[in-house]
Length: 302
Image (cartoon, rainbow, N blue to C red):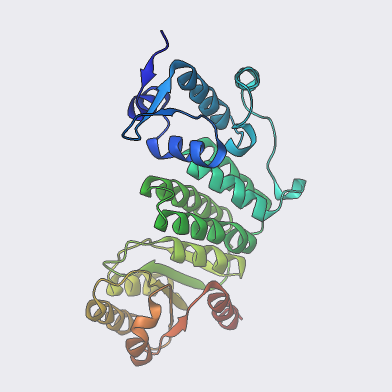
């Protein structure tokens, strides 16, 4: 007799998260499990096998939207072939918007391979500025919106940010110019968000700067000392999350005291406006978005 399995058992047997199984059912009709009087899902052995096949072909590079309605026989044939062999590249006619769609589907399906592949092709096929504004930022915004609606879990958000962080780090290493003014970038103590500063670091290098990216959660004085050591012309501070405005204000005062009056300080990020008063006090520029940060970089690079 055909076995009956709960969704947790199916998740354990297939390696697909419970959230992803539900998403595949709701969005794509991948399987249609029976339900009990209390609305609990129950899966047959045949549905278990189908989900195992779907997971295998998604991991090999196919999107769930493209394969969810295929027969089991077709899925078995795809699985036997291994990876798709399809090169996803904007240079081959796939737009950044389509790459965002592919990456988001892979995130929702918890496909590490799919996310990595889409991000890698975007990073290699797009200029740095286009990768950030046309792919990375829209993908993160889409994942964040889906997370707030309860459509994806925190683990999905971490999957997306981790892949983008890795790509930006590689771009930073590959693109550092041999000459040019230095900019030191990071976020203040208590702010563990780093993607904003990392995006500006990559953007700065595309504009002819040498970037010293120091990561997140650093005291202002430490940022200042690093700036002095490399002779930086500018310090960029990402202000994404401020647990304590007074503490952050003191950090910026320490930063200014450490670097002196000749170094430009630029504050950017979602919560930089909360520090407008201390920004004026330390003669720091506010750059609310990447376009404003790029303008500040260009004005100071000559």
